[in-house]
Image 1 (spheres, rainbow, N blue to C red):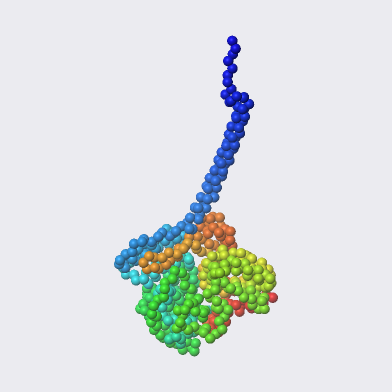
Image 2: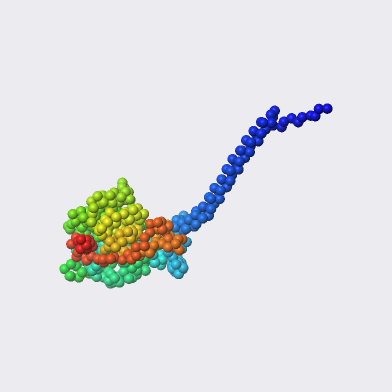
Length: 503
């Protein structure tokens, strides 16, 4: 009997079965290798997430953490509205990173006391009380903003400016034009220096910064009254010395209207320029009217501009704000300036930061690094004042660092220390509309950020920061009022003398 043969399982030919098996195995190998590759990618991504992204998020979140929103509810009574505003201010303890344990505690206690007497605080009193509480942070960027006569608060018909020899009237209404150029001896019985000392607790930051901003308070009777530095909220008594040496006493009532509140720092040094800040300047006169406007006061509204001095041998650049000004981006402007100056082969460069409150320092990082290369053998003069603040200090540091021994800081002490807390933002109390600034990242422009400060230092400073050493003026120069009134620039005169001396 013949044996029964088994039918092939893979079709009519055994060869077809072998081909099918090889194809299946090949597909299996492809998918196996793909799976292994995807698993490795997943491991790498997970490691990247754990090693890089999560620590970076941990570092950056406190810098960009938003300030809590104010309650949408508004109270009916003054006490309720003030309590709501103070509650919004109290949230600063959750965000503000310049607070130390003791200053945060003092801040909270101060708000407890203010909340208890919320029904007694009018807007000026609330503003000054809040300013005093916020200033406990002892940081220049952490302050109540817009505390200035004529900027949402009342003002007398004068504007004041500090000089080496005292405080003087630089602007006045036509009715009081006889006071132009007069030196302020007392206001409400206190000398200017005594007023600066009395106002010091209301401004966080350095003594220089507090002095720089003090004229804002001195021209507002209601702000002085809230600080118990004026008997009445609607007038102030001044004793002044005129140019001829005679002394005069005058009680000045406040002007009608208070102007619009602002949510920024108001810099009194702006009043040194005779160029009116806006059309509302009608009816005012300036001590420099009729005098050729000196170069450094001629373009206060322009963020950046330059000129060539001394037969084109000196490049003069004034950076009033480190911000773009349409239609030209400041970084593009500065790049073009460097190319232009390089072709002219200037001997020295002057960077005037006397009126720069800051902005974004990263817009001028290339400029501050490359300018010393454009002027390879000459000096880099950096002009500073109490108005030089924030990002302007950063640029002064970078210029000094990259210029090395050729850098010369000329002028007055800047408005903040080389170590400061910045970044953060501005928020507004919901009822009074009083604005205040909080900060979230640390800067050290004298020593540089250390690795141990990675969780507090502003992260870009590890790429752009410099350890420039002391940022005090190398050549201190403070202009007298007589020099200013004559249309002179004592700081630039010293720069030109030094430039010639070095030839």
